[in-house]
Length: 257
Image 1: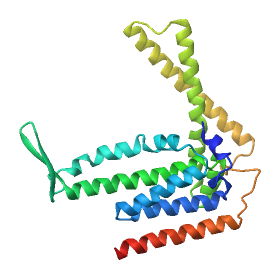
Image 2: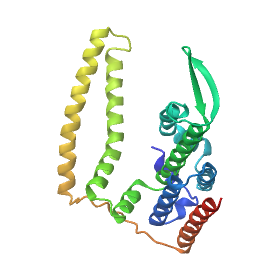
Image 3: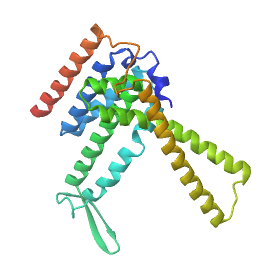
Image 4: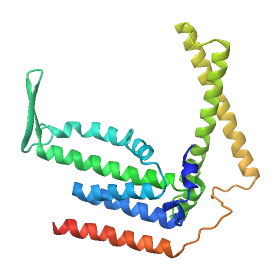
C-alpha cells in the first residue's frame, strides 16, 4: 500500500528512467549472486542502503521490510550447513546435544554467511526497485525486457486482487464481529469460518469472470499502457555507465585478491 507513496517521492531512483533503473538493479543483483567474497557483497549492500536513503525511503522501514521472512528463512536453511556432519572442516566451536558432540566448522560458517549475505543483498535491491517504481511502469518495463505477456498479466492481476481480497476479508470479519461477537463455541466457529471460505471462493470466482469480460470489452490485450512515456536523459546514461564500471571493478578486485 505504501509502494505508490514512495514511488511518487522526489528521490534519486525516482528521477531515473524506469528502464535504466531496472537494468541497473538487475546488474547489481547478478553481481551480488556471482561474487565469492562476503566483503564484496557487503559493499553492494551498503550501496543499496545509500540508494534507499537518497531515494527518501525510511531506512528503518526498509531494513524491516528486507530482513523479514526471506533472509531469516534462508538463515534457517543454512543452519545444518554449519555443522561438521554436513560441512567437514576446521572446528570453530563445539557443544553437546543429548550426549552427542556437535561441531561447527569454519567452512560451514563462512558458507552460511556468504549465502545469507547474497540473499539479503539481492532481496534488498529488488524491494528497493519495487518501492521506487510505480507498479504499472514496472510491468511495462518487464514487457520491454521480453518477459512473456502471460507472466506480466498474472502479476498485474495478483497485485490488484490482493487489495480486493484484503478488503473482502476485512468486511467479512467486521460483519461476523457485529452479528456474533468475538467469543463463539468451537464448532460454531468452525462452521462460520468454513461457510465464509466457501462464500469468498464463490465471490472471487464470479468476480474473476466479470473482471475478465470487462477488460476484454474495453480492448485490453495484456499489454500495460501508460499515458506517460519513458524518457531517457543524461543522468540515466551516467548512472548506467557508473553501475557497469562499479560492478566490473568489484569483479576485478575480487579476482586479484
